[in-house]
Amino acid sequence: MKLYKLDLLTLLISLFIFSGCQNTDSIGLDVDPTTDIAGTFIDTVTVRSTTVREDSIVTNVLSQYPLGYFNDPILGKTSANIALSLTMVNSATTFGTAPALDSAVLVLHYGDEFYGDSTSKIQIEVRQLAEPLNKSKSYYNQTGFNVNSAVIGNQLVTIRRKDSVKVKEIITGKPDVVKTRAPQIRIPLNASFINNNFIKAAATNFSTQPLFMKFIKGLHLKVNEAQSSGAGGIAFLNLADSSRLDIYYKSTTGTTIDTVKVSFPILNASEPVAAQFTHDYTGTNVQAQLNNPNTQYDFTYVQGLAGLRTKIKFPHLNKLKELGNITINKAELIVSVVGGTDNYKPSPRLIMYTTDIASQRQFIPDFGTNPGIALPDLDFGGFYDVKNKRYKFVVTTFLQDILKGKSKQYDTFIAPVSIPYTRQSGPVPSGTTASRSVLGSGKSGVTYKMKLNIFYSRIN
Image 1 (cartoon, rainbow, N blue to C red):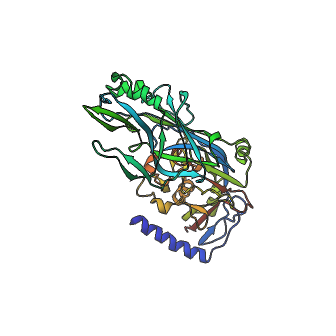
Image 2: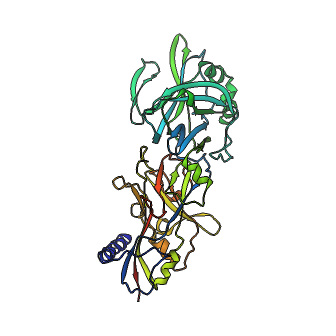
């Protein structure tokens, strides 16, 4: 409630100022420090913006995992593949007497995002890992996996995150039934692989989870671009609690032959799961910007999956001190999406952070964790405004602290995150969204100019 009252007061002051304000010249150019203005609105503060590569990210702690390829007409190619472990539900798993394989299917439940062309047909291939994932190792997004060459399962799919599926369920001792289940990808696995590694494998391989991991090693998922069609897309999968390998086999008990199902869950909290994702900007304007970081372009880029972020500077901000003793009533950074670049939806959410003297990432105070200063998510901003095609960030305390000498301006960045993101995660690169946005830069004269709006008052 305290923050709400302060924000309301700021709004009233801002409206009063705006009704009689003047639009001053660019800070750092022609601001007249002798002008006695009780309240002023400025929207011409110099903003410089640059596209830079994002840092790599550890992928074995993700809340959801990316799989796919996407050929973006603006940003180039993105690809993502997954290495995963299987878990035994019970120790000493057995397959009964004289088991005969019926079928096996890898069940992959969706996460909360698909980014790309939803009409594309994507060929997913499954292979066996050549070595198990190491629980004590950090797998970064650029880390490759040791994978066997043989394809042990494949399926051509169109991503349908909202379409339920019909699945035949096995009921021991009773007829099978068809049930409606949550949206999922189902990939049949090769009978020879299942027989050799499960049905006919030595029982000692299933006596404990460590022995099982050592024997089975794990699975690898990758999209075969040559066998896919369309621009593609990146689908996020829930590999925390509902995805699994289901094996159906016939077991004989006395004179009765029954169909049995045994499941091997994918539980990333128990056994490791990791992802590799890469970006190829060859031949794009993105590559030109990365090669010429000192050039000011008309637009910049942000991209998830540890792709791109936009670096921001306010080089002449301290010129505001020439106005005397002032207080910033409210400051907002307005970032517009460049027209014609939203053929794929812009990132639904961006965050803003800065670096410190040690080049470590820190939230700006308006979006920090100090309850006396930090704003709630919706008040701070960063969510995409579909109507106005822009993002808005409240940076009042951030700028005030710089002007008062409480903090120094280092590098400031904006970058995409998933909608469920919480600031307790810290300002780390995102591996849980593949979204991107093309943003107007701070360059003078551009149509979709990045602006810093400041309402300030002089204190006599």
